[in-house]
Length: 299
Image: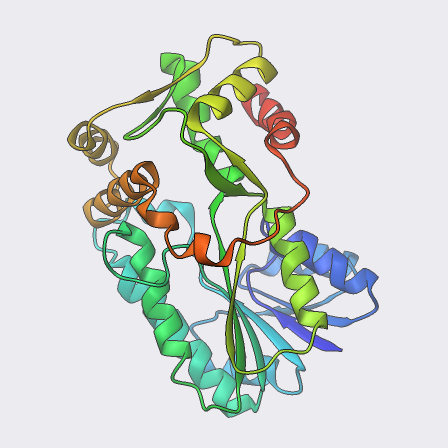
Protein backbone atom coordinates (compact mmCIF):
# COMPACT_ATOMS: atom_id res chain seq x y z
CA UNK A 1 0.00 0.00 0.00
CA UNK A 2 0.90 3.65 -0.38
CA UNK A 3 1.04 5.06 3.15
CA UNK A 4 1.73 8.60 4.36
CA UNK A 5 2.85 9.32 7.92
CA UNK A 6 2.96 12.61 9.78
CA UNK A 7 5.06 12.97 12.91
CA UNK A 8 8.52 12.66 11.35
CA UNK A 9 10.83 10.13 13.05
CA UNK A 10 9.78 10.64 16.65
CA UNK A 11 9.21 8.05 19.36
CA UNK A 12 6.30 6.62 17.35
CA UNK A 13 7.22 7.60 13.80
CA UNK A 14 10.61 5.90 13.69
CA UNK A 15 9.47 2.39 14.74
CA UNK A 16 6.27 2.77 12.70
CA UNK A 17 8.24 3.63 9.58
CA UNK A 18 10.58 0.68 10.14
CA UNK A 19 7.71 -1.76 10.55
CA UNK A 20 5.78 -0.58 7.50
CA UNK A 21 8.84 -0.52 5.22
CA UNK A 22 9.80 -4.02 6.37
CA UNK A 23 6.28 -5.18 5.48
CA UNK A 24 6.83 -3.98 1.91
CA UNK A 25 4.70 -0.85 1.86
CA UNK A 26 5.56 2.39 0.08
CA UNK A 27 5.94 4.85 2.94
CA UNK A 28 6.20 8.64 2.81
CA UNK A 29 7.19 10.42 6.02
CA UNK A 30 6.36 14.10 6.48
CA UNK A 31 8.89 16.15 8.43
CA UNK A 32 9.40 19.87 8.88
CA UNK A 33 13.13 19.34 9.43
CA UNK A 34 15.26 19.02 6.26
CA UNK A 35 17.96 17.35 8.35
CA UNK A 36 15.62 14.38 8.81
CA UNK A 37 15.54 13.60 5.10
CA UNK A 38 18.61 11.35 5.06
CA UNK A 39 17.46 9.41 8.12
CA UNK A 40 14.02 8.88 6.58
CA UNK A 41 15.50 7.66 3.31
CA UNK A 42 17.95 5.40 5.15
CA UNK A 43 14.94 3.58 6.59
CA UNK A 44 13.68 2.97 3.05
CA UNK A 45 10.92 5.58 3.11
CA UNK A 46 10.36 8.72 1.06
CA UNK A 47 10.81 12.08 2.74
CA UNK A 48 8.31 14.92 2.26
CA UNK A 49 9.82 18.05 3.80
CA UNK A 50 7.34 20.77 4.71
CA UNK A 51 5.02 22.06 7.39
CA UNK A 52 1.69 20.48 8.29
CA UNK A 53 0.28 23.99 8.47
CA UNK A 54 0.66 24.24 4.67
CA UNK A 55 -2.58 22.83 3.26
CA UNK A 56 -1.29 22.74 -0.34
CA UNK A 57 1.81 20.79 0.74
CA UNK A 58 -0.32 18.34 2.71
CA UNK A 59 -2.77 17.91 -0.15
CA UNK A 60 -0.01 17.12 -2.62
CA UNK A 61 1.65 14.69 -0.22
CA UNK A 62 -1.61 12.92 0.69
CA UNK A 63 -2.72 12.51 -2.93
CA UNK A 64 -2.73 8.86 -3.99
CA UNK A 65 -2.34 7.50 -0.47
CA UNK A 66 -4.30 4.44 0.58
CA UNK A 67 -4.08 5.44 4.26
CA UNK A 68 -2.72 8.53 6.02
CA UNK A 69 -1.55 8.59 9.63
CA UNK A 70 -2.25 11.92 11.30
CA UNK A 71 -0.89 13.24 14.56
CA UNK A 72 -0.68 16.67 16.13
CA UNK A 73 2.56 17.49 17.89
CA UNK A 74 4.53 20.49 19.11
CA UNK A 75 8.14 21.01 20.12
CA UNK A 76 8.76 20.61 23.88
CA UNK A 77 9.99 24.20 23.99
CA UNK A 78 6.52 25.41 23.03
CA UNK A 79 5.30 24.45 26.51
CA UNK A 80 7.23 27.47 27.76
CA UNK A 81 5.73 29.92 25.25
CA UNK A 82 3.49 32.21 27.34
CA UNK A 83 1.43 33.21 24.28
CA UNK A 84 0.55 29.67 23.18
CA UNK A 85 -3.07 28.51 23.27
CA UNK A 86 -2.43 24.79 22.94
CA UNK A 87 -6.06 23.85 22.32
CA UNK A 88 -6.25 26.35 19.46
CA UNK A 89 -2.90 25.13 18.09
CA UNK A 90 -4.05 21.51 18.00
CA UNK A 91 -7.38 22.52 16.49
CA UNK A 92 -5.58 24.50 13.78
CA UNK A 93 -3.49 21.45 12.87
CA UNK A 94 -6.56 19.21 12.78
CA UNK A 95 -8.40 21.71 10.59
CA UNK A 96 -5.55 21.70 8.07
CA UNK A 97 -5.50 17.92 8.09
CA UNK A 98 -9.24 17.88 7.45
CA UNK A 99 -8.98 20.20 4.48
CA UNK A 100 -6.03 18.31 2.99
CA UNK A 101 -7.80 14.95 3.35
CA UNK A 102 -10.87 16.33 1.56
CA UNK A 103 -8.86 17.94 -1.24
CA UNK A 104 -6.61 14.93 -1.80
CA UNK A 105 -9.41 12.37 -1.96
CA UNK A 106 -7.98 10.16 0.81
CA UNK A 107 -10.59 7.75 2.16
CA UNK A 108 -8.74 6.08 5.05
CA UNK A 109 -7.40 8.02 8.03
CA UNK A 110 -5.73 6.79 11.21
CA UNK A 111 -5.51 9.55 13.79
CA UNK A 112 -3.29 9.49 16.87
CA UNK A 113 -5.51 10.94 19.57
CA UNK A 114 -5.28 10.29 23.31
CA UNK A 115 -6.99 8.96 26.35
CA UNK A 116 -9.33 11.69 27.58
CA UNK A 117 -10.43 12.60 24.05
CA UNK A 118 -14.00 11.52 24.80
CA UNK A 119 -14.71 14.68 26.84
CA UNK A 120 -13.72 18.24 27.70
CA UNK A 121 -14.53 17.87 31.38
CA UNK A 122 -11.94 17.03 34.02
CA UNK A 123 -9.22 15.92 31.61
CA UNK A 124 -7.13 19.08 31.66
CA UNK A 125 -4.78 19.60 28.73
CA UNK A 126 -6.10 16.46 27.02
CA UNK A 127 -9.20 18.39 25.97
CA UNK A 128 -7.14 19.44 22.94
CA UNK A 129 -7.54 15.90 21.59
CA UNK A 130 -11.32 16.05 21.96
CA UNK A 131 -11.48 19.15 19.76
CA UNK A 132 -9.10 17.64 17.20
CA UNK A 133 -11.27 14.52 16.94
CA UNK A 134 -14.40 16.61 16.53
CA UNK A 135 -12.83 18.53 13.65
CA UNK A 136 -11.84 15.34 11.83
CA UNK A 137 -15.33 13.95 12.44
CA UNK A 138 -16.58 16.75 10.15
CA UNK A 139 -15.07 14.89 7.18
CA UNK A 140 -17.56 13.33 4.75
CA UNK A 141 -19.06 10.01 5.79
CA UNK A 142 -17.17 8.14 3.07
CA UNK A 143 -13.88 8.94 4.84
CA UNK A 144 -13.21 6.17 7.36
CA UNK A 145 -11.34 7.18 10.52
CA UNK A 146 -9.70 5.03 13.17
CA UNK A 147 -9.06 7.11 16.31
CA UNK A 148 -6.10 5.68 18.23
CA UNK A 149 -6.18 6.64 21.91
CA UNK A 150 -3.03 5.75 23.87
CA UNK A 151 -2.84 6.12 27.63
CA UNK A 152 0.09 7.93 29.28
CA UNK A 153 3.47 7.22 27.69
CA UNK A 154 6.17 5.48 29.71
CA UNK A 155 8.53 7.95 28.04
CA UNK A 156 6.82 10.82 29.88
CA UNK A 157 8.61 9.55 32.98
CA UNK A 158 11.87 10.87 31.54
CA UNK A 159 10.68 14.24 32.83
CA UNK A 160 11.43 12.93 36.31
CA UNK A 161 15.15 12.45 35.68
CA UNK A 162 15.98 15.99 36.76
CA UNK A 163 13.82 15.80 39.89
CA UNK A 164 15.31 12.45 40.88
CA UNK A 165 18.84 13.81 40.50
CA UNK A 166 18.11 17.06 42.36
CA UNK A 167 15.62 15.95 45.01
CA UNK A 168 15.86 12.17 45.06
CA UNK A 169 12.14 11.60 44.40
CA UNK A 170 9.49 11.46 41.68
CA UNK A 171 6.95 14.23 42.22
CA UNK A 172 3.33 14.49 41.12
CA UNK A 173 -0.02 15.50 42.60
CA UNK A 174 -1.11 11.89 42.99
CA UNK A 175 0.53 8.62 43.93
CA UNK A 176 0.01 5.42 45.88
CA UNK A 177 -0.76 1.81 45.06
CA UNK A 178 -3.68 2.16 42.64
CA UNK A 179 -2.73 0.68 39.28
CA UNK A 180 -3.20 2.63 36.07
CA UNK A 181 -2.40 1.84 32.41
CA UNK A 182 0.81 3.04 30.72
CA UNK A 183 1.95 2.55 27.14
CA UNK A 184 5.20 2.31 25.21
CA UNK A 185 5.54 4.30 21.96
CA UNK A 186 6.82 1.09 20.36
CA UNK A 187 3.55 -0.66 21.18
CA UNK A 188 1.66 2.31 19.77
CA UNK A 189 3.62 2.00 16.52
CA UNK A 190 2.83 -1.71 16.36
CA UNK A 191 -0.88 -1.05 16.89
CA UNK A 192 -0.96 1.66 14.22
CA UNK A 193 0.83 -0.64 11.76
CA UNK A 194 -1.75 -3.34 12.46
CA UNK A 195 -4.61 -0.95 11.80
CA UNK A 196 -3.07 0.34 8.58
CA UNK A 197 -3.03 -3.20 7.22
CA UNK A 198 -6.51 -4.11 8.48
CA UNK A 199 -9.60 -2.96 6.55
CA UNK A 200 -11.73 -0.54 8.58
CA UNK A 201 -14.82 1.52 7.91
CA UNK A 202 -16.81 4.23 9.61
CA UNK A 203 -15.57 5.97 12.73
CA UNK A 204 -14.03 3.65 15.30
CA UNK A 205 -11.81 3.91 18.40
CA UNK A 206 -8.91 1.82 19.66
CA UNK A 207 -7.32 2.38 23.04
CA UNK A 208 -3.71 1.29 23.58
CA UNK A 209 -1.81 0.30 26.71
CA UNK A 210 1.23 -1.82 27.58
CA UNK A 211 1.13 -2.42 31.34
CA UNK A 212 -0.93 -1.73 34.47
CA UNK A 213 1.26 -0.44 37.29
CA UNK A 214 0.97 1.89 40.25
CA UNK A 215 3.07 4.98 41.04
CA UNK A 216 4.75 3.09 43.87
CA UNK A 217 5.57 0.18 41.56
CA UNK A 218 7.06 2.63 39.04
CA UNK A 219 9.24 4.23 41.72
CA UNK A 220 10.43 0.82 42.90
CA UNK A 221 11.24 -0.45 39.40
CA UNK A 222 13.01 2.71 38.28
CA UNK A 223 14.82 3.09 41.58
CA UNK A 224 16.19 -0.44 41.44
CA UNK A 225 17.24 0.05 37.83
CA UNK A 226 19.23 3.23 38.51
CA UNK A 227 20.74 2.04 41.77
CA UNK A 228 18.43 4.01 44.06
CA UNK A 229 16.30 1.26 45.63
CA UNK A 230 14.72 3.69 48.13
CA UNK A 231 13.32 5.96 45.39
CA UNK A 232 9.88 7.25 46.33
CA UNK A 233 6.95 8.66 44.32
CA UNK A 234 5.82 11.66 46.36
CA UNK A 235 2.37 13.27 46.01
CA UNK A 236 2.11 17.01 46.64
CA UNK A 237 -0.93 19.35 46.58
CA UNK A 238 -2.25 20.59 43.24
CA UNK A 239 -1.37 24.22 43.94
CA UNK A 240 2.19 23.32 44.92
CA UNK A 241 2.70 21.38 41.69
CA UNK A 242 1.16 24.21 39.65
CA UNK A 243 3.39 26.80 41.29
CA UNK A 244 6.42 24.65 40.63
CA UNK A 245 5.58 24.34 36.93
CA UNK A 246 4.85 28.03 36.41
CA UNK A 247 7.96 29.07 38.37
CA UNK A 248 10.00 27.15 35.79
CA UNK A 249 8.38 29.25 33.06
CA UNK A 250 5.76 26.79 31.81
CA UNK A 251 2.80 28.30 29.99
CA UNK A 252 0.12 28.83 32.71
CA UNK A 253 -2.69 27.31 30.61
CA UNK A 254 -0.62 24.19 29.92
CA UNK A 255 0.61 23.90 33.52
CA UNK A 256 -2.95 24.10 34.84
CA UNK A 257 -4.00 21.51 32.25
CA UNK A 258 -1.25 19.11 33.30
CA UNK A 259 -2.19 19.43 36.97
CA UNK A 260 -5.85 18.74 36.21
CA UNK A 261 -4.95 15.79 33.97
CA UNK A 262 -2.72 14.21 36.62
CA UNK A 263 -5.37 14.73 39.29
CA UNK A 264 -7.78 12.78 37.05
CA UNK A 265 -5.17 10.03 36.80
CA UNK A 266 -5.09 9.84 40.57
CA UNK A 267 -8.85 9.55 40.97
CA UNK A 268 -9.14 7.17 38.03
CA UNK A 269 -11.65 9.47 36.32
CA UNK A 270 -9.37 9.77 33.29
CA UNK A 271 -9.79 6.07 32.58
CA UNK A 272 -13.58 5.74 32.72
CA UNK A 273 -14.00 5.48 28.95
CA UNK A 274 -10.84 3.41 28.56
CA UNK A 275 -12.19 0.66 30.80
CA UNK A 276 -15.29 0.34 28.63
CA UNK A 277 -13.02 -0.95 25.84
CA UNK A 278 -10.43 -2.85 27.92
CA UNK A 279 -7.76 -3.29 25.19
CA UNK A 280 -5.26 -6.12 24.99
CA UNK A 281 -1.99 -4.97 26.52
CA UNK A 282 1.12 -4.58 24.38
CA UNK A 283 4.42 -6.38 24.86
CA UNK A 284 6.46 -3.63 26.54
CA UNK A 285 6.27 -3.82 30.32
CA UNK A 286 7.56 -1.60 33.10
CA UNK A 287 10.73 -3.66 33.56
CA UNK A 288 11.52 -3.23 29.86
CA UNK A 289 11.10 0.54 30.10
CA UNK A 290 13.22 0.67 33.25
CA UNK A 291 16.25 -0.42 31.21
CA UNK A 292 15.73 2.49 28.82
CA UNK A 293 15.26 4.83 31.79
CA UNK A 294 18.71 3.85 33.07
CA UNK A 295 20.27 5.02 29.81
CA UNK A 296 18.46 8.37 29.97
CA UNK A 297 19.33 8.80 33.66
CA UNK A 298 23.01 8.17 33.07
CA UNK A 299 23.36 10.55 30.13
